[in-house]
Image (cartoon, rainbow, N blue to C red; front, side, top):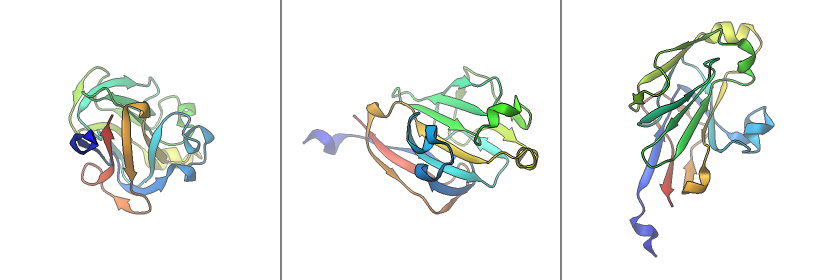
Length: 159
């Protein structure tokens, strides 16, 4: 009954490209939602931006992934590519430091897509809520092209 008063929240696309359902990600950790719930983007841009306002709470030392903790406690993970941890940071340039407060649309990591593809890695990028127990009513979009920082990726409500 009080669900009517729950706030609608949204994540903005952190990268440009085609949105895919997680079931299309060629890695079971993501496709079976073992790390969290969300969607993926097949990258067509070189800059990954913050999908929401929050604290950059995790920046992997290999720069292939980062986490943002929102004021609500919701945690977002952006994992750039599949198995790209094996590149040991090559092809990734961090633009902010862990612990910084970031704003939606702010550039976080620059990627060398050509280099990563030449090394044989997929650029499919999962964007996940890693603590989905805090949210409800997640509504995804998939099968469309989005622009980094400009298009809504999915919406949810806080429990």
